[in-house]
Image (cartoon, rainbow, N blue to C red; front, side):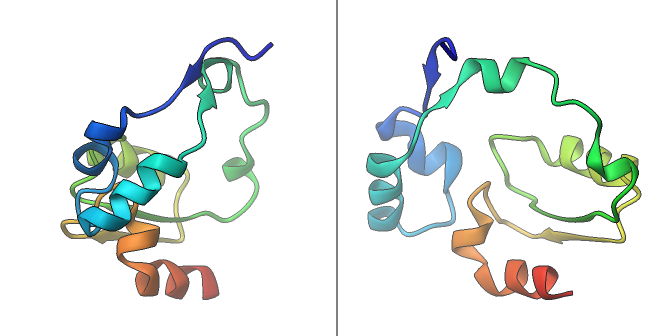
Length: 107
């Protein structure tokens, strides 16, 4: 048992998770989101891969799920090889800014 399932309320999804995604697309994303078990957010993950594997980071300056300051801290702690901050991007930047995400992955 993973405990309680967590999800973003559909009526809040666009603003909270995908503010820079068109409303119709965000509505579809809200309706098809998969819940995450609260245990996945609470239990230790084990040895941090970023300690031995080069890390790259990309995040949005307007992320409302994980504060950009936290994302910056994590990138710096991991000694990120490259960090890209996409101005105005939400947590769903892989949807709203696919070219930037793809470019970083291809590096």
